[in-house]
Length: 130
Image 1 (cartoon, rainbow, N blue to C red):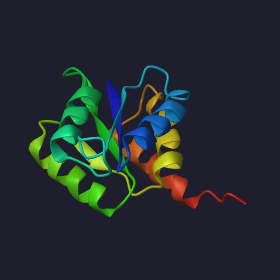
Image 2 (spheres, rainbow, N blue to C red; image 1 turned 90 degrees about the horizontal axis):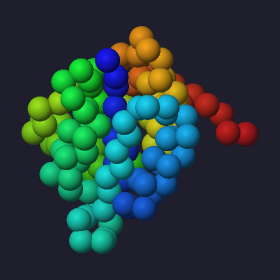
Image 3 (cartoon, rainbow, N blue to C red; image 1 turned 90 degrees about the vertical axis):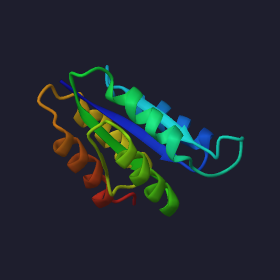
Image 4 (cartoon, rainbow, N blue to C red; image 1 turned 180 degrees about the vertical axis):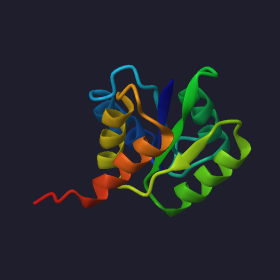
């Protein structure tokens, strides 16, 4: 039983960097980065997000995937990908980096659920930086 994570950014490099940081806290949690327009530019592509969802979900023992997104159209494309995917997935309304780190920590709990990981990701919105 595991919850996977997908980080969606308009920048492939930003998504990979966020995953690199979150993975430090993630233990064995599957975290996938997806970003860019598929041609090296800025944007997001629903088909690529759908592929990342499947990879983060892993085998049939998975408990779903929490998706973290950076900007507006990433939300829209993540919603399209979730509709297309054969994966139980939810989008967290959270700051993408802080939410990914919180979600990565939460996902290491052996009793983690899709909802508990999303809640922890969204709790990052309440963290004051100064």
